[in-house]
Image (cartoon, rainbow, N blue to C red):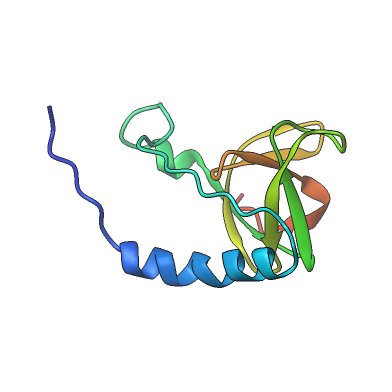
Length: 109
């Protein structure tokens, strides 16, 4: 088994905490999902992901693509995301939810 470690957890906590506090204060659900793997595809897998930035005040993210998909939570304006996949204008982001592609821009080309 290879050695594993968590790095930059304080910086990650400081980035996500205000989003969680705001969601709870507004009566929304707040979810955190721990993912212990990077996407498959070898050493350069993370390079194949595209970066995006949420460009609307509040963006619902969903379990599956489509307006009727189960809502998992909310992303706020300025939130950086890694886009893993696209289906019919919906982006699967690295937080394991789906958001409408209408509200994500600045994708790497």
